[in-house]
Image (cartoon, rainbow, N blue to C red; front, side, top):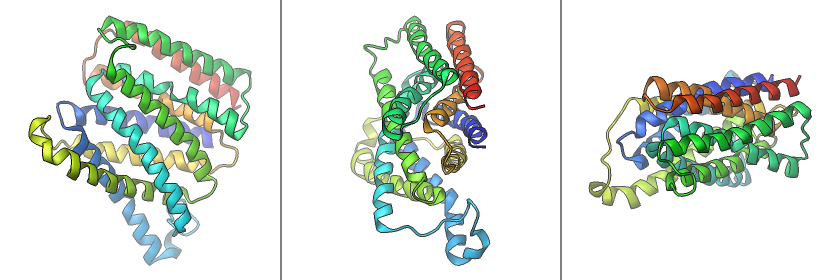
Length: 299
């Protein structure tokens, strides 16, 4: 069940990537990110209100949001900082790089998560799973070759560096999720970490972006900003619920979630008319093959 949920999450994560690219295109990144966190918190707020005013309505379901202790709030706040760090780097990278480049780079995030899962949680992979991991790593190097054809040097381009930093901090978040979901309500964690992110981004908007808004890219409202929050909320909701399963392996869930690149790649072709598709398609095929071996490894 947890593997099926991971694939569902991957689909909506790909839709999120497309909407994010659309939202930050020729637009100010910081306010878009702030609105994203705000809408994510608002989308879950009805569950919080129902859980507080009429607990029996949702109690015993994944939609129930229980109260959490102050120590739990501390753990969730740490997650907020980690995720926000990943998002800030990731949003700027997505704005300046083709989606057919950022998607596959992000798809390598599970390799970092895998190392952490082996060292921290003692997870062990079988032969099929190791084959999937190795193929994913190979796809990253092939992607770097595709990027050079578009004048994107993986060694010198700062936006590639931003995307790599986003992937590293995102991997750290994934490992932390495994701990959080075994300790606290998945829905409570999702609501509160979005709320804390919103508050942190409000400070960034007021203190850093707003005073200098005239010197940077202007902000323009786009309906795709709302879709970013909707798709991300669904993707995270399903993902967090998958991790509540004691048998769920974060190394595998993280790998499967990166299959979202299939959706984002299609979006890059259909909506943004990105180029050099032949070379990137090979990378995409390798990722599909890697996901297949990961699936075999869980049978």
